Image 1 (cartoon, rainbow, N blue to C red):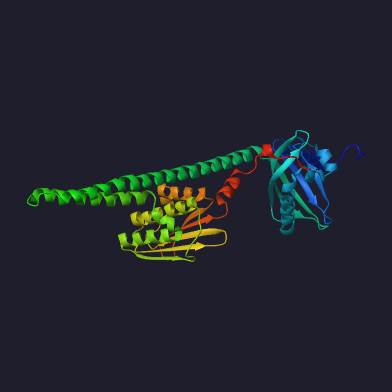
Image 2: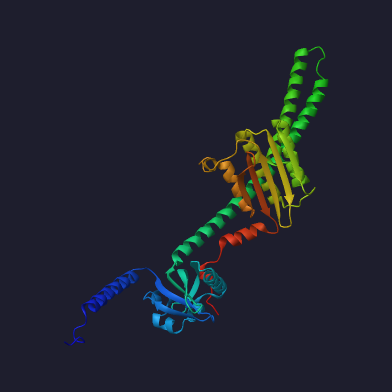
Length: 390
């Protein structure tokens, strides 16, 4: 019998099963978006791609054959500013044999275009101290563009918020000055004229004298109202510095509420710009207002600190605390306003549970051009402005 012409049945079955498995694999790879690949890092630092799917050309602008013959070309595709993060993530995955997940930008010279790609791969150690990954690379440019647009929108919103708050404070200052100077001055003149007229009233006309006293007291109450409204619009204590302004406001809060209050600062004076000082003061006012409205607290402490690059303010109470559901309420504009004010200055605001119960409101404002740093960081780089690697 000629066994060469008729192979054993088990060999034929094995070949058919292998062909079926290969067919299934090819179907899966073909319908997988992106590039399916194998990548090997040898002990001497050299690399190779044992397998590259047909997705190589659409994703990288190189055929699988071209990249397979010159695997170092992949690193050349990566923008120079992203190469170190690529190397670091690869080495970390190789050392710990953890999943490799990296995203970065590549330059496709054939299309004069930049793409964002994401690679995810699972490593396994080989016998010769090499590491091999099996994974997939995908094009994430569209999602990255959307993220960048969101960052741009947030930056523009933060800038608009800061501008609106600045204009509001300027308008408040103008109105406060006009009320104090014009209305206050006129009321003072009226009081002086009324005092002069009262001296010339007939001494035996009790009813007229009573009316004059009433008008005089009405003028006094109006002058007090003018001072109060002017102060609410633009606290004059800010002219004495943020430390004095916050301490004064806290003492007023203690006097009006009767709560056990403590205030401390690591500096007698803290140099802040007018916008920063006003914003911090407004956040502080809102925090105290929230304590009165919602906390049911009996004790409040305030700590103000100046560090090398920032100013921090912590307002703590022993009340009922604030929960995530409270923060997410549609009408929680007070908290949102505090967060936006802090963010507009390049700072942060956090709400946490105080030890033993209550709430801690912590505000941290960066110094030295913090607002410009925020805008630059929030804007980020756009793909259109990225130059090709050199």
